[in-house]
Image (cartoon, rainbow, N blue to C red; front, side, top):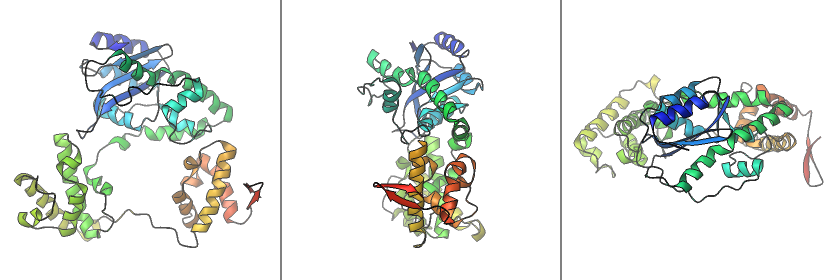
Amino acid sequence: MFISTQEELAELCDRLSHERVIAVDTEFIREKSYYPRLCLIQLGCEGLTAAVDPFAVSDLEPIAALMRDPKITKVFHACSQDLEVISHALGVVPAPVFDTQVVAAFLGHRTQLGYGALVKSYTGVSLPKSSSLTDWSRRPLDADQLEYAEDDVRYLPGIYEAMVAELLEKDRMGWVEPELAAVCDPARYAHDPREAYTHLRHAGSLTRKQLGVAREVAAWRETEAMRRDIPRRWVVSDEVLVEVSRRMPPTPDKLRRVRGTEQLNNHAVGALLAAVKKGLACPESDLPTQRRRNRPAANVEPVVDLMYALVRIVSERSGVAAPLIANRDDLADFVVDQGARKLREGWRWELAGKQLTRLLEGRVGLTVKGMRVEIL
């Protein structure tokens, strides 16, 4: 079902509004823009799939109403990018959400499980890959492209039901719910220009004063990219911003000596210099600090190795993917910081945190039996 009129969309959304579960997916492009451009939105329930053309349908509020409805669970696979796209295009972060990729990691599958592998595992169907590199902004879309797009929601309602049954059988619904609630937090999809400096590549060697400048010049670039709706790198590259932050040029001539500033017009040069000046004027107490994670002390690393071996055993026994339980940084935090919360709360504490505590206290150990590591 291809939806290209307002009337068709109203009829579809009225039908879906009576469902307790709907499947959702999006197709978008963002190679030439700051914001992702929604090109297609797929919706489905048991026995129905549809692809909505946002280029032909001007008012997507009926879909936004479905996304807001707390009585309807929206089922996605690997939803973070989809939620970002929907948040920008429709002005709403869908909730409640059920992400089959997240849930799969609680049910014996690897983390980052692909959609094709998920469908194959639960239905036995092998999905075609013929349209995986489609330019979804081009029209018209042919029948094969639409079939490919609708496949992305066709199987999700049935998989959702099977996964919920597994979660209930294993008594893990309470484990999953906080993880799923976190992905619906609107703060995850907000763009704060003053936090853009934290994502600058090669900024690890900057001093605090230089970081203060980096915060301002990166915020300028972010705002400019948002205003013009172009990729950040089209304004100016990370490398140039880091070099400007390091040199802190006071004049246009000195700024122009930084390679990569040639494409900046005089207005942009002035704005960039104003950002440098603002960063230099930042009080010492307000300067940012490097958000780098220190390597564990030499005596901690072997302990973390042993802890991770225990996490792998717990993962194998429980069917919960090891990276979902804890990574090495989480384990190092657990050793050195008694206030570290991730492994001391909720299902992670019950599943692994208690045993890790016993391991650190010397009350349990690990041994090798038949080429397998086991808990003593």
